[in-house]
Amino acid sequence: MAFLPGIFGRGNTPAPAPATPAPVAAPQPANTPPINMNQNPTGQPASMQQAPANPGANPQAMVDGSNAAVNPLDNFANMFKPRPVDPNAPKPPTLQDPLLGPLDPSAFRQQISQANFASGIPQETLQKALSGDAQAFTEAINSAAREAFAAAAQLSHGLVEHGARTAAERVNGSLDSRIRNFQIKTQNTNHEALAHPAVAPMLNAVKMQIAQSNPQLSPEAVQQQAEQYFTQMADVLTAPKRAAAQAASAPKETDFSSYLN
Image 1 (tube, rainbow, N blue to C red):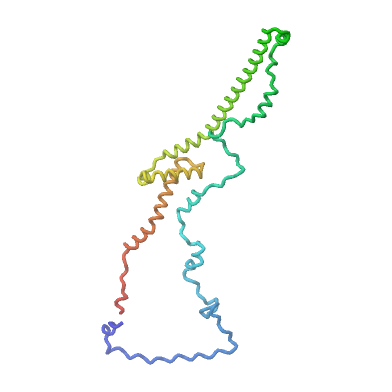
Image 2 (cartoon, one colour; image 1 turned 60 degrees about the vertical axis):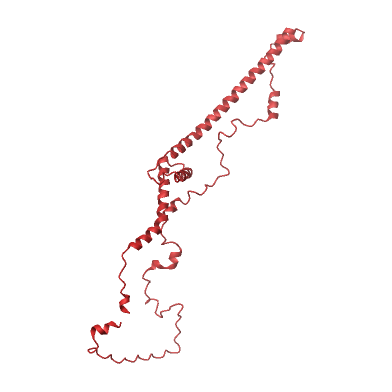
């Protein structure tokens, strides 16, 4: 501090007093145990040591993440993880699956072999046909054919009825989800950036992912969560840039260290 004598003057400055010699420390007894600097570097008893000024600045506390800032994107961490599939859960049928069950040809032939289409032929007609009456023989054949045709028509009607009913049940089962997906896709956003053609497909993909992971959410709630996901992600991505700009715009304190040289 070369400028201080010039300000306060040198003539009136009293001479410094001679330094008092430091007292000689008394030698320690030979039986005094040495101080373990690894356990207590200050050499003071544990009761006299001062507690750290900022316990939260402990590096161990920083490593375990107890004082780490909460990332708002943590709420959406499980959104893109595939849900575990139960291998024992029954698979719901779709319209792409066969409407009728598989048909075993051998079992069907066995059932047909037990059918008696001649049971409806009158006994008189059979007796006449066996005695050589050609007209009665023709009538017996026609009776058996009519019986077989009626059985075939009844079987076809039952198969068509079963197939139509199964298809209607499958359509009704998937109708609610189809209407919900349509309502989710047609939800409009108030954010101009999210409505841009370059961002809208990503917004729709996120909405469908949220809807798949949360079947109980309404279309409005799905839209709100998707927009919240994008806005929070934008805040997290731009946070370092905003912090740097805020630090650059903050008024700087005057540095007086140059006056001490």
